[in-house]
Amino acid sequence: MKNTTRLGLSAALLATLSWASWAQTAPTAAPEGSGPAKPAHHEHRMAAPDPAQMQAHFAKRSAELKAKLKITAAQEPAWKAFTDAAQPPASVPKRPDPAEWAKLTTPERIAQMESHQQAKAQHQAKRAQATKALYAALSPEQQKTFDAETLQTMGPPRHPHHPPERDEQRPARQP
Picture 1 (cartoon, rainbow, N blue to C red):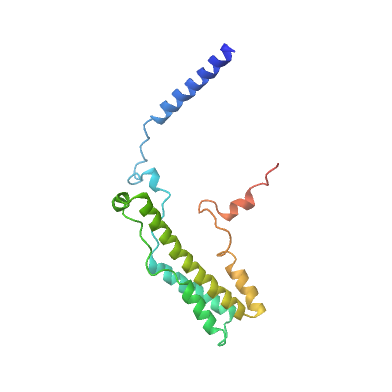
Picture 2: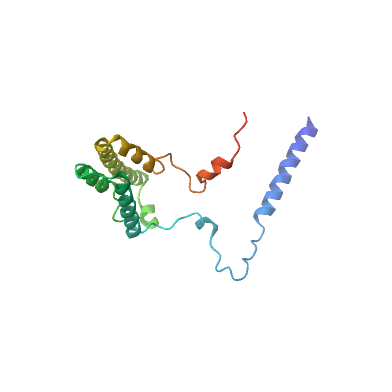
């Protein structure tokens, strides 16, 4: 029993020491000409989207969808309500200033987060209602086209570092 305990403690000590030495290893220099080194914790962050660029993309995508659906004059009011509700925001909400955020109490922070979530939920509900109204105004052939065109945008959310192609390449798990 004593030997087993000693062996376990020795293994734990060895693992701790090896981890500590690995954690303190000096980082290697970046290859020459590669530019300034970026902090590792910033690599995964994406730049804030440009509202003008989002608007242009939305306008292009809407025009393409409208052409594929062959929207009639009778369907135009439902189409307009749909595109108005689906518009990207005119400005991207900014993250709170860390210094100001730190001054708030936890209940105040929670209240701000809840307020933001409620506004987002209201926008999503308005968009969903307009989408349902447009869908009801479409012919069965147009509905099939709409279903096919919006499948990717309305599918389950995906992690940006896990593209769908990886699922096809991965073998099925065996139980």
